Image (tube, rainbow over all chains, first blue to last red; front, side, top):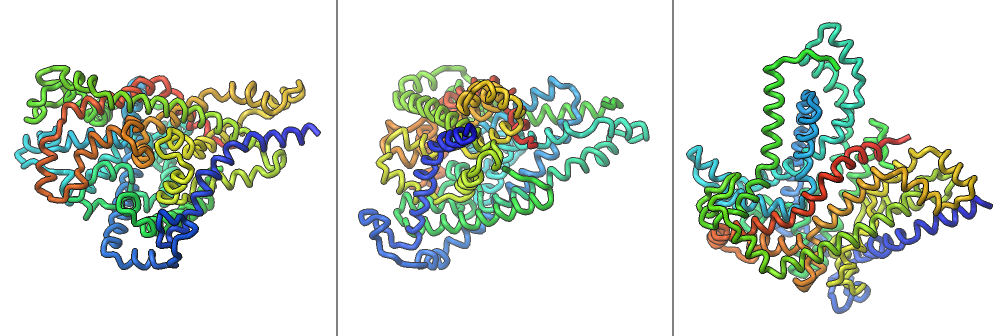
Length: 296
Length: 293
């Protein structure tokens, strides 16, 4: 009897959250039908004319589509690669510093950008990268001409990847640092007795024991192949760099909310959601198969 | 730990780490220096990490800007309301979900609902239409209700709750405590670090969000601070409406750097103040939360 009372209360505790999920996550999913309609706001979702796959056909025939998909994948993959390598290397270097106070200070500093919004970081970057900003002062000190980083298709992607590394690399080392603390110190002692120097211990013990974590993170990052970083790009791009910086999410935003092409924007967003969902499912499967990793 | 230190190697290691840390904060220091410099010094590109022609003109100008303070107020309201809702929902959902299916049949159905909504979303346009239909445009609820269920935080908390010894709950249960009492007197007091962690995440999330404010708030007086900064500082620089490249380049050159720097710096102060207190919690919180039985 007592058990029944408990279970009743468990459902009760979950009730408010479930209602909110239904209202703001499940019900909007019915709005996906806009992707198959010539949506007219005054007529609403139920009464707008049904056009089947027309929005998708239009999307694939649109000259911009190819560029948007290429930009999205190129930027996302560059970020994934940089985001895997930099924290790994940084964690190894940090692990070699033995002074605890120094280590903690460095960690506190490098985690900070993770907690600042892309609006703030973009405000900072726009100042720094402007013609009279600090970066161009350095460029000129070395005899170069000032560069318009944010108005140059040559530099824009590099700015995106570098600033993304700046924001996230510190925070992404946390998981490696956790893995490093779990390495049994007697391994190092045994190796030292056998005459292994510092470099040998790094390459023969530390790195091999971190590889499983790195493989796991690589697998999970597969899910982000279509996430080029909406908030960052929205705050840094401008029409000059659409050619190299316009991605699916920014296009959906402009087409849907600024130009009122609801059907097209919803269709493009839906395509992205479905592909991302498949990628996440695959990456979790792989992570479970090879690393026995489960998120829940 | 083995110690066969080599001074040269140590100097390189500490040097590289110091350099990386400095590079990380350099942009923030540059912004701070700009905000205290004269406009002429900023435009001529003389400002690095120390103010040039130190003055408070930019801050005096921000003080006169009512829109800035109104937006600050909206953000504070959003953070308090949003983080409180996130906290209540997270605790209430994580506790039953930390029970096994044997004890709580139906647990997995809820869990799948949670995971599904995390992995698959209707997308921008359908969500916007829904909020519009509910009549929530220009309401603070449009900022806190769609984000009320923080699935990632809940999973973190579920994993932590799973690690709390069952004996504690059994003992309380024998003493006559029901599930609500057990949650409030056993689970919450033993989970302070992880609760601090998820609260930090919620506060930062709500403070940093700008996009929902930008699309749901049609009147500028309802903008939260990040949306205000986005519109005034960032968007003014982007000139998405201007298509002539030479015009864009000209506008980029004349933007008011010092005033923008002051606004950007002021808007990050709450994070900077809050950060050291919770920084010591979040690492332990994340590590603890991800440890499973």
